[in-house]
Length: 177
Image 1 (cartoon, rainbow, N blue to C red):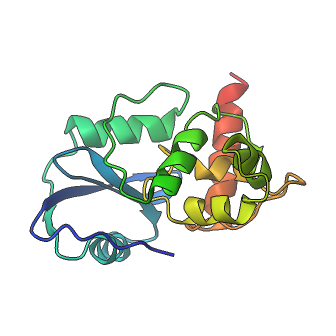
Image 2: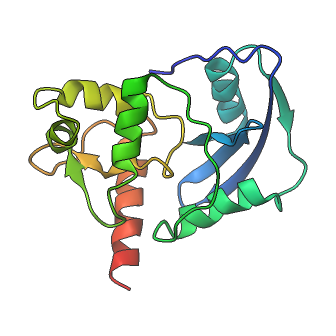
Image 3: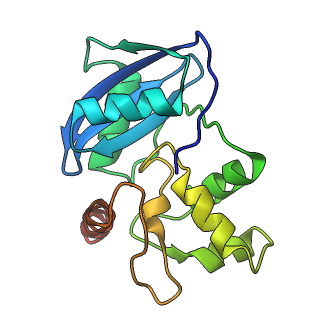
């Protein structure tokens, strides 16, 4: 489920890099990083960015050295390090509360949808938490991949279960170092 945000005429600068997740598009507004999207091809990712932010002026960044881009790529390599990248998270108040709670789950740890819902004071809100996870525009920086079913098994991930598994295995290997 991709939430659309009207940013008519607002510039969004983007760049695509590669890591163990495949291609990763990183985009930013003047306020901060608004999207981190893993996928199979740059074309697919730019199309997803355009769907998510219709009306925005999308501009390809010609440099891989920009602080915002490099900061995200560094976080993909080692999510234990606190990221100094500013985020521009656009969503409902509830989605932003969920995303804030997810950012408190340490690298190498996981929580269930129901645990996150209880933390938010919504003991029966696990489906709402799952919907907020699915709407997350900023992979890894808002670690929705760390949320599992109550029994600890993997469940849906908007960028595919293979990527979710790769993220969790990568973070577990970091925790063992």
